[in-house]
Image: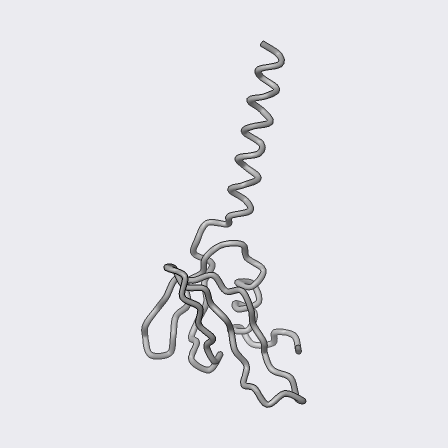
Length: 100
């Protein structure tokens, strides 16, 4: 797979590495909140058009051609960050319990 070069491809790449939901804006004006779990910007030897794969809220999966996308924004909570914060709270509580 080639690297992201356009602004939209960079947004898609950031969304792919994000651990939360994103908002996808389509060229027809609609939007959807989803988890972007796969992307392919195309390869000269493959005939398939560049695409992203989404896991929409509610569980439906959809493969979407990148040409249908207008923008992708990081809009949901980063689930790994929430987990880390929770672990820190548990650790601090355990430390406080030991010191008491």
